[in-house]
Image 1 (cartoon, rainbow, N blue to C red):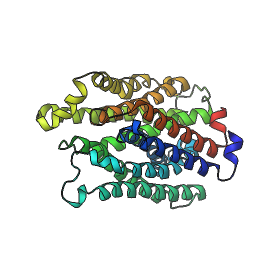
Image 2 (image 1 turned 180 degrees about the horizontal axis):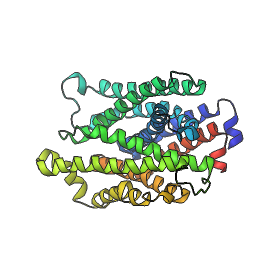
Image 3 (image 1 turned 30 degrees about the horizontal axis):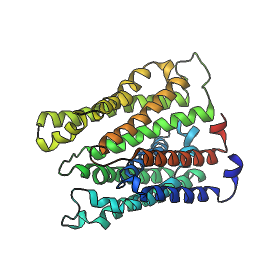
Image 4 (image 1 turned 120 degrees about the vertical axis):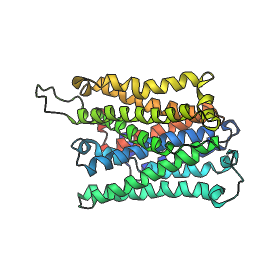
Length: 348
């Protein structure tokens, strides 16, 4: 694998092959109307944009930990181009949205796809400029990191409002966009922890309480974001429960009143809060690679299950097509990180 990826243009070839495979699966009759592709796009968009956002946020505050995994986090930016291509494959699926055919520019199919496509491409451009500034160690890296974070927040917010929330029209939530980009950062820190372990291994043991490793710093961020996620979740749920408005309650009722959505919704709470929060309470656990890896995988699994719970009651998902989409994008994700790191993460 290392020899293959070291060849010039090998990554571009892999991206083209993956795009062709995903397009074939998306256009096959078994894939339905694009629901499986939409789920894969949402999940991997969250992870890829979140990885770059984690590096940008760490750069802005001169975080010590970010230097240990910055190169690997920024290496995923070519996948943004593939995600933009997958968004174009969803054009026929737009007709399935309940508002399709409505009056006004905002509800036009071309503008719907166009604005999301524009911000995905803009995220790719700003991520590239940020990566170039980091590589040159230039003074503009902080400004470019802030620029990317602005585009990242807008891109994730649009994805939440347009691609997910509008499936349940006329239901709406002004908090939904913020919920998505906070989860993307949460996912970015989870990936950062896994990469830190793969690249650098177990942190050296020390009796000095003030000597913290990069892994410990990332674990503190995951611990804090588990609380932030729980707070946003509770704020959203409390507002809907207290208001008891049929248009708002219907969104939660669909996902908590019947199996298997009820059990999956509960599992999201455990995967994103009730497991990460107690697991990372102790100082020693924050430096334990086994605990941190388990927590990171729990976070990423929780986000994937949550995206499924958001979409499944509203669109038809084909398990086979979904598995191909997710595995293909996972393989590409591993390849781009492996190539950038020179094989270190997978050899560790």
